[in-house]
Amino acid sequence: MNKIPYNLLNEISEGIIVLNEKLEIFFWNYYMGILTGVQEEEVLNKDVFQVLPNLNVPYFHKTIHDVVDKGHKMFFSAAMHKELVNINKNYNLNLKASGFINDGERYLLLEFIDVTNQFIQINRLKDYVNELRQVNKELIEKEKTIRDLAYYDQLTGLANRTLFYDLAEKCLEIANRNHIVLCLMFLDIDKFKNINDNFGHKVGDKVIQKVADLLSEVTKEDEIVARYGGDEFLILMPNLTNYGHEELIAKIFNNKNKSIFHEGQEIKISFSIGVSFYPVDGTSIDKLITVADHAMYVAKAKEGEDNCYCNSCELCTICQ
Amino acid sequence: MSEDSLRNDILKEIFNISVGKAAGLLSEIINRTIILTVPQVDVLNINEEIQLEDYLPKVTDGALMVSSISFHDILKGKANLIFPAHKMRTFINLCMNENNENDDTTFTDIDYDIIKEIGNIILNSIVGEVGNFLDIRLDYSLPEVKVFTQLNLKKNLENKEYPHILILYITFIIDETEIEGVILVNLTLNSLNELMKNLDRIEKKLYE
Image 1 (spheres, rainbow over the protein chains, first blue to last red):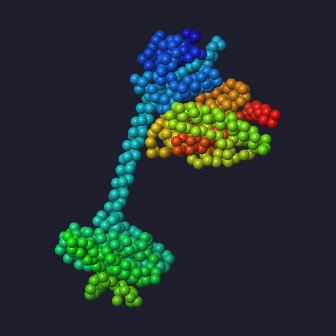
Image 2 (tube, chains in turn brown, orange):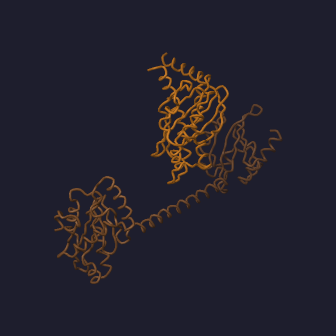
Image 3 (cartoon, chains in turn green, orange):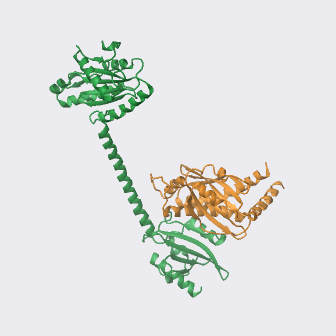
């Protein structure tokens, strides 16, 4: 081989091996010495598979023969072929194999391209992306918690006053546009102060939770249940037809789960419900709540348990 | 059976043998069972106002990953292995034994190198088979890997220098994952004529 190309190959920062047709090492450049710790004089004329035993696998033999016999150019990626040249040094090397003819003799060129830095950088980048993904996931969770805190009642999981107003405004717009009747119920637990005084606030909280579960169970998907504050709840029925409010009130009053047990003692729960209607009782949410609240006090003043009062519903059989 | 469909069937059989060998080699490298089949072969003339995308039925959505090699000498042309990019992400993860939940189609240089190796093995088997069939030794490059949109790929493929396209539909099965792609071999008129002449010879032998 001419002296200039020979020196040139020694200057290249990639490992170069030239094999003869018998797959014996004909040339081994300086950089191969760096990659393997083995110098050219130690490997010249030796079988390549003896010098680099990690290449001594059937698929490599086959592809090397395809390069020699059929003129194929082959590429082996560092990701799929680890420790190609030296198991003790953690190099990541891509390998290109191609053939050439010089003075009628066939030779095989093996180029080992060091991509270790690429691997380090990409792995760093992957770690960084994974960290970012994790941070992003945590942020989304926090955002959800903040949203929940802003819109949902922490004790019952029901909509709070803010969310109720948001949803109710939208229902009111639809009702106005489509000329439909909307019903609002103001619901208060009877003698709740006595429950708190006699059994403590923890038991009071359990009663509140029980009522929230009960109301969620008896209402339909499009009906909005919210905790208004203390022992007061709101229910909005966005499209009232065929005295549907009476049906719902009956479901609440007749529910079998209207009690909780504390230390073996049954604590019964009863309600006073005030009802207002859009548009007859008011055209704003505030007005409808005020009317329903007053109606609830009328109901509370009645004798016995589980009473209701509708402000504008003389024909309402359940309120009598 | 029409002349064209018999020719396509002969080509299909020839290419199935060669991709079968490529699958064996790939299975050995990644130590998993890989099955490669060519269920259909077509020859298109892009001057005949055909819509190339009509022939790429299952790889038209989203980004496409393309490995290409050029070959010259007696036979001149370009071979492209085309797979949907998101499917290649799954495949790369399987090759690297990574249970990566991330299925985005952003590829690193390491990913490109893996596809380059796979493209090298598969395209060598196809182009090598064409060379064997015509009894010529072809000189060809290592693959170049690129990600294209469908439109860009169409522009890239419709090269007037190569009016004929040999289409091989290819199915890649690795473990439970099946990936459908195509191999497009752009050929000059002379190259196609050479190929057809050899096919005619085989056909005649069939009827002898």
